[in-house]
Image (cartoon, rainbow, N blue to C red):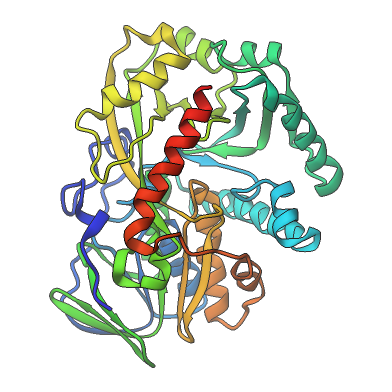
Length: 437
């Protein structure tokens, strides 16, 4: 199957990380060769983000010969550009999952999500990855009518799932925590965390390298051919592999149409302010947790290690990034924090993530020797890392945890690959209007 260039080349310079705060503060500049000539391996992984690197690492630790192919640079996609939030649970809350798959399977999904969180923390510790890991995510309700649900949900997690690291926060307390009057309550989850996403990805890549994985950058897969072995065609070479892992998320396009019909790319944007004076930074987020609000077009933000406000937000329905991302995201930032009107914006960048119709990731066996995990829908720091481990387990003959994720229904987007975008735009416009009124 041939690939079209699509989002993989729409908004960024080939082979370069975007000019983000994360790229500017990367711990190390790793560099890997471009694949040329004919190669063979046990497992070929397409994509060097969290899912791809995690799968490669876990397979190499099991003794497999693994190659990773990345069209640009390690951590170039959503894994190196995101908000850095390591959240609890799945992308859908447990009440929704209970309705979708039943109580027993909802519990299995919760346990997997908690294992994902623990896996990220364990990998950071084991491989000594310096990525500014800090505890806590505050979920903030932008409407008074949402507060009762937040209170009930914290109680539900404690009672039904034994999770006691989350608690309800009322209006008075949330206004002590955040220097804004925009919110009416929420929940504080101290089992969740936040980190520097690109440094985490680079740390995984270095661990892969030390485990014997061969990583190739600027090595875009142009065609994939099913078979035993499978065959992947690149501009200057080809690979045959006993197994193939697709870890492309929002960039898969037509390389694998079954995935592209269920995983749609959308763009998101983040800015970083100048470093803030200690008192001002503490007045914005008193306890240095990450924040995500309840809007459908979500605002998410946190403080960096050097006291910048990293703020993600805004809505865009075009294929291309806005011409002035800094101005674009500054507007919703000032709606939350008008006191920052005189603060300069040092960085602004966009990225492409993959979403599914029900916002649950899409795990699939595309062939007996081809696996996919993608569509993490903004919840990928934890779940994409776990996805890599689950795909490694499956190739190694232990598929029970992969099966739990694969059984979650992931529906086709209405209109197919070509009409899904305009239909999604209509839906996003509706929900963005609902946010406002």
